Figure (cartoon, rainbow, N blue to C red):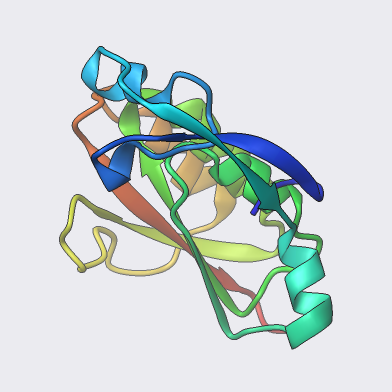
Length: 149
């Protein structure tokens, strides 16, 4: 998935969480780069929605490429989640800003329990993100719930 249909270079590593369309992703995470490059076709979420219909839930976990994927989405599903790294909180904030008309909550690490007791507005989740320590070892998932009319 991406912001436009294209053929892009994917860095492929022996560790799945290091495979990414972000150049140098592996080096950013573990400090070295030992990948091979494979050109892959990329499409948009909008194109998939046009073909298959709007899902109730979209999960985006693309190792640093989340903002590009969300840039290829013009309408938000009822629920959506995307992975974030606390070392790159500005990317997470940009992703939240793309999801207008939503409320948010988040999980840290592999725990599948919301940190917040309830859903919060964009400004509050962005403030919470800005207050987090930056650490490549800390990841989480931000969940967005579209506000109903």
